[in-house]
Image (cartoon, rainbow, N blue to C red; front, side):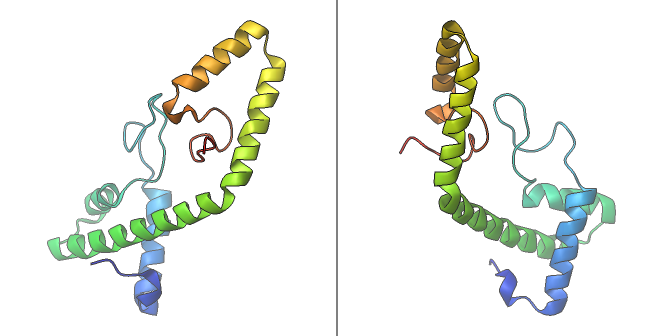
Length: 142
């Protein structure tokens, strides 16, 4: 069952906020952990299961606490993902403009051979999304 943050009591909300703040600062993923792009760079925050594993290791949680925190962290993950999607939809035009401006600026610096190689690199990337700010997030090919 997923609980919306807005339906939590003030105490539950404070606990949720504290867990998120502490987990973000104290539980940063080590280099080999978490989702990765093909080039090995990390992307996105650690998932609920990863956060819970770190909390459990640090705090020796009971089974009941683990169950409750997993549900809470999964709920927060779902809300975060929904917010991310709303934000990306809202700002997609600006991200695409920025991406296109960045690619144009890159091309203005390159030789003809380098520009051709750059275009080949863009075609190679998943979805042809290009380089620069907004590249992994906004699909500007629509």
